[in-house]
Image (tube, rainbow, N blue to C red; front, top):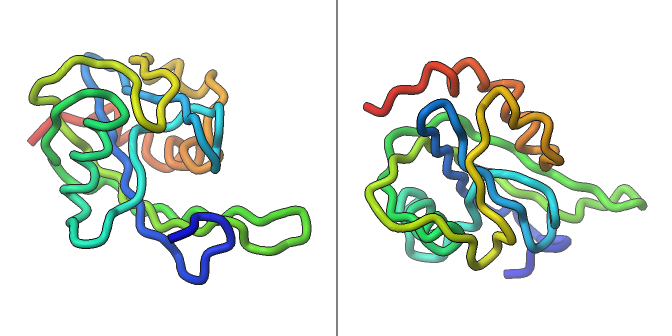
Length: 147
């Protein structure tokens, strides 16, 4: 399925990983949002659940083994080209996830993977979708305690 100029919205997932007041962010290596910072995530593959997708994406992008805690937000992400035509359309389910193991290392669709204090994350060159997510959910992120 092609990402650009799709016929239908695509379902994606995002992993919100918080430890000791820091959030894990990755620098994207492909469009949309190339060279900008966001959370680990990607598209749901045919035959996998959204929970399986977020676990797989974190492993591929960050080398970490995780388990899903709970859903935090559902995000509509639409990007239009210079002619006003819809270029990308994603529905993204963002989950709080907990680390079970592995070693942090960038891979797959991530150029870098770093821990950033929640108070400093908005200083980074973030994707528009992630910046909007932070504005809506910062209080939830600050109060997050794994269940």
